[in-house]
Each structure stands twice: as C-alpha cells, then as structure tokens.
Length: 407
Image (cartoon, rainbow, N blue to C red; front, side):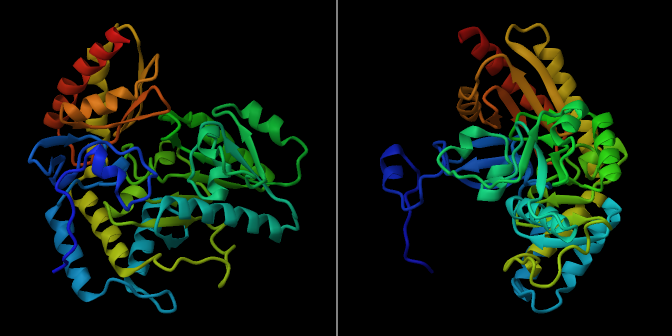
C-alpha cells in the first residue's frame, strides 16, 4: 500500500500547493466514483453527468460488462510493443473497417495524435506527388488539438497565442461555403487535402451542411485531394450514426477517432480508405502506447456494448427528445438563440457569454460545459434514458432563465 497521502478535498489554499501543473482552471469538486450517468463527490453528493468526460464515457460509468472485460485484460496483458502482432489490434481494426466501409487503421492514444497522423498522411501524400510544400485546407472555429501542428490547424487564435511561430501549410476557410473553398484554393497546385470536423465541437457545435460535405467530397475527387474528416468528438455513435459524416452518405479518405472509442480508456485511431491506406510505410509513423492490448480491449468491448444495447439508435432517439424538450422550454426566452447539433451532441446557444453557467450547473448537481463562450454543450453517455433527459431539462432550464434575466 502506498504511504502517499492526499487531502480529502481541494480548496484554493491547498490547490496553490499542488504538484500538478496549472494547465486547467479546475472547478472546486473532486469525484470519487460514478455509475451510469451519475457521479458522486468525496462528500457523497450526487451529480447527473451530461458531459461524459467531454464525449468520452460512451457507455457511462462503471458499466459491468466493460469493467469485467478490462479487469480480465489487466490480468492477462496491459502492454505489448508494436514490434509484434497484437491480436486485439487486428480485431478492433477489422470492426472499425466494417463499420466505416474503409480499409485500414492506425492506432494511437489520443485525438491529438490521430489528427497529427492525419496531417502527416496528407503531407506524405503530397510528397509522393512531387509537391515540396503541401498545403491543407482547414476551417474557421475548428479544433484539432494542442500540439504545434494540430494547434496550427486549429481555428482559434486564443489558444494559439504565445506558441508561435505556427506550422505553415494551412489554408483557412469558413464552414459551409463551397465558393470560399474554391476561391481559397484557385490555381494552387500545392493543395493536398481538406480537413474538417463533421460537427465542430470546441468551436461551438457547428454542424457542416450535408450537401456541403457531398460537395467537398466531389471536389476532392475532382482535384485528387484527400478528404479528411475529424470524428474525434462527433464519431462513435454520438450523432445517431456510427460516424457523423454518414448522415451525408459519403466516405472520407482519412478519419481520426478517439474520445468515445474506449469509454474512458485512452484510444485513438486513424481509419483510412483506399486512397490513403498505404501512404505510410514502416518507420514513417508510430506510437509507443498505440494499439496496446488494454486499449484495444476497451475499444472492442465499447463497440460490442453499443451494438448489443442499440446505443447508436438510442443516441438518435434520446438526442431528438432532449433537444425538443429544451427548445420547448426555452422558446421565446429573451437571450436564447437556438438549440443545435445532432443526436447527443447538443449546443444551446445564448446571445451572450455564459461560462458562469458551468459553475452554477455544478452547484445544482449537473455536469456540462460551455464552449465558444456562449454555447452550453451537452454530450452525455449514450446510455441516457428519457428520465435523465427530463432531469437535465428540470435543472438546466431554470438556471438559463435566471442567468439571462440577471445579465
């Protein structure tokens, strides 16, 4: 047993003395355990989790099937390096290929890593075509990660500040405008790929029009570009399809995944179609922890649970129910703009910054986040039931109304 001791609660005073680097504006709560959509803090207070670790805990907290599988896997093998074949890698890769209709998979540990790999794929694709300075089209308000390359691809000057010089080779355009995309790339022989989120998460739950996605797919085919869709947050059943781009009836060439793929165990993946599947060769890319047996078992069991319990269908049904309830309760309220999103990726847009609501909701026993300053984000576990949706509405709507009246 370890002889290390920690304070039972964190206060501003002992937080200042914490050995953890100060990279998060943490809220004053520490959770001890969770079950389903519920979590409890160290004092035993219950919270309803409508955040799911930011779209990570796909099957909720403490799912008995997932827990048993991970316990079994820990006893068998946690890590095996990629010098050798890993059977569960092959199993999870085959399942992702089946669900996506694509060809091959590279495994890593995070969404950032998956997006970094996508950028490298695009550059290598261009290099093989003889392009010395390849360029990738990216989008305003996008978020792809915080490494130097993914930060450079991200469309948020606030999180880029202080980390220059940024990586070159990105062309930025607004979402849902084919004209803007064509103008920005006109007569540019260095363009190699278009990289977008089917639904922007950190950017404010901004949905790409389905017809726009079809147009970009056609343009990429016409110009021999890679079409890369970041499904890190909107993938894995969250929108009511396995992957959000499937609503448009299209298929990308490259699809980064992470977050919900492992239900809390770090798993990242890059799924590639025929055009991109064989760009990387041995030595071009790698990840020490990528594809380890524990992470692969988490991915396999997550998908198995989703299929057995029809969680993709549940995401579509419960997401529509929750969004309808919210719209009904907030319709006509001064300061409410709209509900947007798809399935269980919902944004409630207000006409003013509302980050204070995150703390107010926490005090009322509800976990959520505020993104892009004025968007309340709800991304609960896919096991959510109507009673949970009703509880979210009963807690959140009065808080929103009170906030809008007082600001």
